[in-house]
Every structure is written in structure tokens, then in C-alpha cells.
Length: 315
Ligand code: NCD
Image (cartoon, rainbow, N blue to C red; front, side):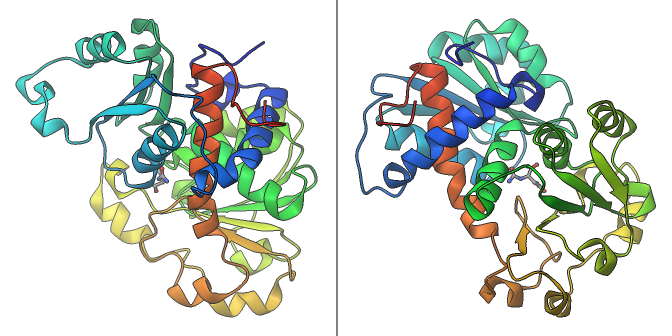
């Protein structure tokens, strides 16, 4: 099935083949993302971005992706200056955006908001994060980062660390890694474990998953450490946040115990999970990961909006 005209709400909406199609296209689009080559595949296309939660990378990389491909964007980046502040409902906002633009990207604090938007919109909807639910396009760029480093996704040993309960990036990523046959090690405080339904889904796929609270033991023989921020905004009880916020800080001394090819990833923003000394080591992959957001979103947007990327070999 082609990706043209499709919604991307959960990573489960994409098959293994479709994920690989996006990643392959993204690889070919890197020179365009770097501004070294020009493409106009998305000329005349307009993307609406509606962000009801803070964002730097996700929103700007969607905008960069559209513009690098010749397309344009309209944006609600601050709901307080839109009619949302007058009490307009999410459904009315989505209906408007879908008449103005060719596709809608939505970030919203409520889990399920993007699925609802997709039901209301006759244009494709892309979920850029719905509460503690899913963040499928982040997963695509996470996978692109691993694939670029290791040339494969199957058989990788990936440690997911930090806030596995509220972190939507890990909910999407865990499923995708399961699809590609990676081995998962979960390292979180007991109160921030991966939700039951995400875990059950991995079990149903027959994925190799284990929990290991001790980070030093978890990263032994690992290929990737995926660090997440404790999601302060999702805690009902700030005292509980204060209790866990200092835990799971990556100690750079641990780098003396890892494989030479080991990488540290983070969807960013980081707060204090990874000290800046790690940035200078060859293990730091998070800035490359942030860059790959652009070619990956270029690939996805051009496949959804135009059914092709326009670059040879890139679909
Ligand atoms: C993440 C998010 O919004 O879920 N950020 C991102 O999109 N790169 C991670 C986070 O906020 O911790």
C-alpha cells in the first residue's frame, strides 16, 4: 500500500516495509536536507502545524523539511494567540486547518488527540506527540540514526532508560524495535516502568525484553543507550517528580565499559540526563539524531503528499 494520503498516528500504522521505505528515502535526501542539492517535489503544497505543547526540534524540522522540498507551512506555535484561547474546540481548529492546508501535523497534551483529529480531517494527519501516547515520526528518525551507524536494525541491543512510563518517544520506539527484532533492556525507576500495554505488545511479537535497573549492568554489551527526560509535565504529583528526577543520570565514567561502537541517543531536550562531557566523545549520537529529523520528515512528507520523493533511488 502506498503512503500517499495516509495518516500517521501510531508507529503501528506503518508496516515494516513502509518504515524501511521512509528510511531509504531519507538516506537519499540527506544532501537536500543539508542544502547541497535542491528539490521541488513539494512545490505548491502547504502543511499546517498545530502545536499545543512546547517544541523546538519537531516543529522546526517539519518546517525545514517542507521548505527544503519547495513546500510551505502555516503554524500555530502558541495557542494563546490563536482562537483556542477564545475557547475554540480542538475539533473546530482541526476542521479549519484541514480546509486551509494539504496535511496537518498535530502535537497535543491529550493521548488520542491525533486519532480524533484524523477522524475529523479529510487531509492526512501526522501525530507529532499526543500526551504520553505516541510520537511515530520521532521513531522514524531514531531508527534512521541506528541504521546509519550499524547498517542494520535487527539484532541490535538497545537500552531504553529514564521515563518509560510517560515518554511517548519510547512507546513508539519500543514497538518498532520489536518489529525489527532488536533486543530491549528497560532501565527505569520502578514508578516509571514501561506501560503494561506496550510491554504486552512486545511480548506478543515475541521480542526479547528484560528489565535492568542497574545502568552499568544494562549497558554491558549494548549497542545503543536511548536516554529520555523525566516528563515533568505529565506528573500529577510534583513530589513524586522531585523524588525520581535526579535518578538515571548518565555517568560518563561508564563509557570506559562499553563497546567501541556504542552510541548514546536522546530525543532531546535533555535536562540533566547526559552531562556535556559526553558530547565530545564518539559515542554521542544525539545531535546527528536531531539533524536526521529533517531528511526523515522530508521523506515522510513527500511520500504522503506527493507519493514520491523526487530523488533517484529514494522512492
Ligand atoms: C520529545 C517529545 O516531545 O516527546 N521531544 C521531541 O520531540 N524531540 C521528548 C521530550 O520532550 O522529552
